[in-house]
Image 1 (tube, helix red, strand yellow):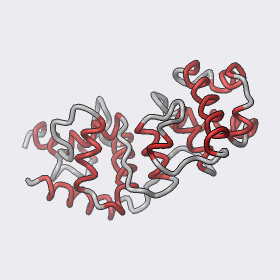
Image 2: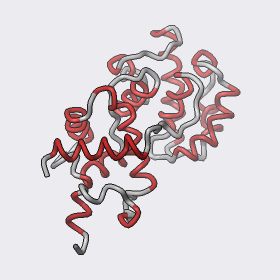
Image 3: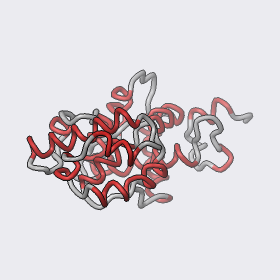
Image 4: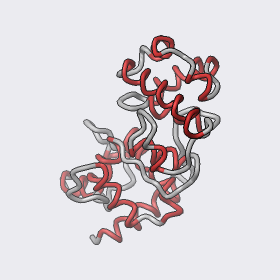
Length: 214
């Protein structure tokens, strides 16, 4: 099967079966999503959603967060993975937002990546989810699932995967395609035990075709 055809089948399937797909992180504005995405590194969205209400109540905007001490932030996120680093990143991010961007979350990847704790993946999430730009964040789910299905081939880094995906997915579908792949990876194409018997992609999935008994 040609790669182009595989992408067409992927898009057709999810357009029909998952016409609405969005982040499972809870947020009400760009600042809140930025905090949540920084916290979500190596941590589940469920865990992040348990932590963020208290953070947003105490620090409703970047200015409030910038005035918090690292220790105060740590106390609120201690049950998250890497709380030491994330406490410093959140304070640094808030300080830079206030100092350099008038407290407003930037709408472009270049400026977002200047913020502490914000790499390309996080910047892509913000520009995609908040600003509906054709950015595709590659996390562990996207990296794994894209390779398994056969949407990405021989990609050794998230950036290589990202480039292959955006080449074949129309710009207007890139923001939702990101969530299609993540949610599929989270609930069906799991890392250790992919649920191929309940998956609707088996007729064009490389992994299934290589590993099935047929």
